[in-house]
Image (cartoon, rainbow, N blue to C red):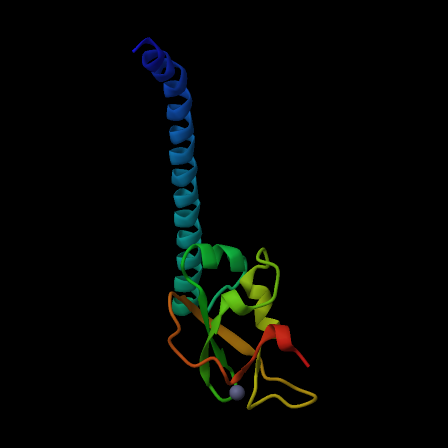
Amino acid sequence: MSTKSRQTIYCGPIMGAKLRAEGARKRAAAAVRQADRAEAEAWSLQMEAYGGPAQPSPTIGQCLNGGLGWLEVECSRCKTRASLPLADIRRPRDTPIWKLEAALKCRSCRTRRYSPPVRMIKLTEQQELSPYVWVHPSEER
Ligand SMILES: [Zn+2]
C-alpha cells in the first residue's frame, strides 16, 4: 500500500508532463498543418480567380502538409490541363511552388528549341486530371 502510493506520487507528475508535452506537440503539429493549408488555399484561390501573382507562394512541403498535394497546370499553347503530384516532384520540400512553373513542359508541345509556358491553375486535394502528358520537373532532358 505504501509502495503503491509512493509510486503514484513519484510517477504521476512525470507521466502527466509527458502526456501534456505529447498533447502540446500534437496541437502544435495540427496548428502548423492548419496554417500550411490556409496558406496553400489562399494561394490557390488567388491563382484560380486572378491568375496570380504566383509569388510569393507556399512551398512544396507546405502544400503537402496542408493536404493540397496536387498542382493543376495548363499549357498556354494547347490548353491541355493536368494534375501533378507534388509528392513525386524530386525537389527540396522547401522549394516555393512558383519555381516549378519554369521547369514544367507540355510533352505534346515542346520542341528541342522551345517549350511554351505552362500556367499554374490551382492546388487540389486529389488528382483531378491525368498527369502523364506532362514532363516532370525532375525528369528534364
Ligand atoms: Zn501543350
